[in-house]
Amino acid sequence: METTPKRGYRWLALLLLLLVFGGLLTYTTMGVTFDVSGTSKSEYSVLQDSLTHSVQRAADGKLISPQASKTKDAKGGKADKACPT
Amino acid sequence: MLEKLRRITRTRYFIQFVALLGLNANFFQLRSICVPAMNCHSCPAATFACPVGVLVNFSTLRIFPFIALGIIGLAGTLFGRLWCGFVCPFGLLQDLLHKIPGRKVRLPRFLGYTKWVLLGGLVFAIPFVYPHLNVSYCTLCPVGTLESAIPWAIMGASSPWRIMFMVRVAVLLGIIALAAVASRGFCRVFCPLGAMLSLFNRFSFWRISQENESCNTCGQCAERCPVEIDPMAEMNNGECVRCLDCTARCLKLGVK
Image (cartoon, rainbow over all chains, first blue to last red; front, top):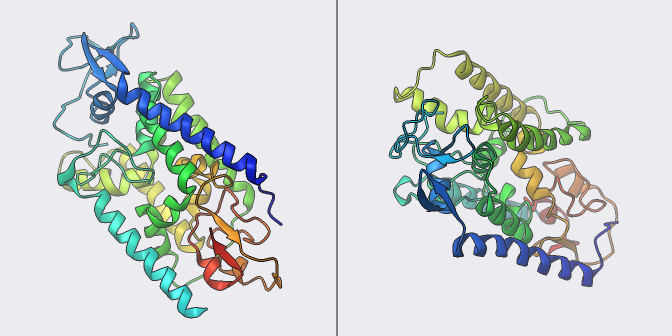
């Protein structure tokens, strides 16, 4: 038969998991920002930009926007076009 | 019993079709959030971001994916792999492909570890360590090929006469062939999102439970199971995609 965790532990684990993952979302919504080419951007914005490669990591480790930067190893990335894979 | 099975199957297909349309309703453009289902955000019609694609991108950028992990974790904690059974469009495609008559095979269970290797290697490690290599799960993902690479090639945005494109199409054809002979082959062997959601199956709020102990070991539930587990012996196993077919076959299983 099934080996499920005991009922009390399961509810405790569920509560803990909800707090952890809900906390991650709340935390990023409330205040996580990234510096992209000198502009402060929320994670939601970085996520959307990353889909079109409109944000990249430069050789010095900083996040850059290829449109805003003239860094020579940065390429691609048009914000209004989806990545053609 | 048969009527209940038909009802569950019809309901599941209906929800899967609605999810397919919802996930590909371009006019909403909610790509700053992701939904726990394999649906490529590079698809011209995609509404949401793909969580696996987001994890790959964030590994490449070397930043912590709060949103993707938060959404996958919350989705898993609430429903486990119900997303695989009821929402994922690629799951729907595999369900339909498996209806094609012909020889069917059972997959060895150890193949299920492959998705963990893919998750660790091609989603996290390689994009993180070698971000400029452009080698990641997304470069071979059959969902991306079907929903993005092929449509973009048809629309002329990218050339189909590239080695990488041909490799991708070959992988897609392999997965399609696998789905036709082995039920939910991709979900069980190659899906990194399924691997992550499987961690929550045993704990999740919504799960399958046995309403009483009077199982007569008829084996009907195991015979029907699309991921080839024995629901009575391994209820809420990580591989279970919660299609609920077993609950229709056996009146002793109940959803709780």
